[in-house]
Length: 303
Image 1 (tube, rainbow, N blue to C red):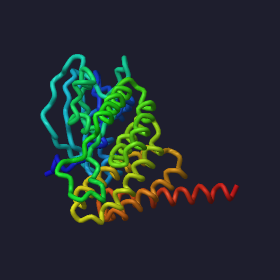
Image 2: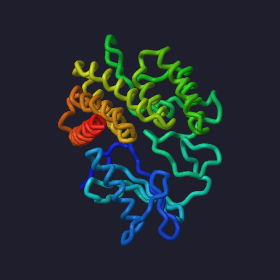
Image 3: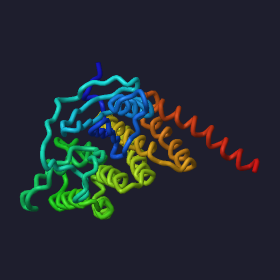
Image 4: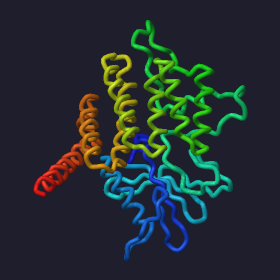
């Protein structure tokens, strides 16, 4: 049986089941082959991604009446429920959605609550959930922090603005704000960069997002020497690499994808995750890409 809580929240395959067998997957209209139905086609698409990642993935399937089903799909196409069905709602607020846009909800790394009604009523706890795992305490801290690091009121206000910019369809402006926050506060630099990487992916730049995730992973590798924080760092590292892996699957240029794949495999090794299913899947894909890359180079040389 699949342990639902062990499946990362990223990525989420968004499936829309329309009238008369219409199907969208992650916002794209998807053809249904003869002899298949929309549901089996959607499951196969999710299973293909699961095989690429080397682990089950989350799926949110919305029926034509608006009912939302949360599922887990494994590499073999097995399906399990990850929660109760959500009945249709009117005017459902979707995070990271352009005003007036009716497309399917894009993937998110965390559940982002609606912004507070005013800056004075800021809920810092809700803002910190933008960062999947809080940054570990500074290496020179005399005593381990009793609670996770929290943003200052000024930083939290910036994160509120970032969320609003993302919801308005302008993630690029949010990225600029995060760059300022990251430079001003090294304490949470890695955590802020994690959020910036997600916004960069939402901005349509998977390779740049992957670079940010890999940079964060390299910093986490330096923190693994502290035995008191290793478990926390390892949990965060697995999430970061899962996001980097997903970005890698979106990179279309063969030479760039091959280069980034080598960095991803190295990051898995450095963080002690070389035998993880996702790492093995990455090595298989990288080997296949290398063969295709060398074949393409050889063909060019022959001409």
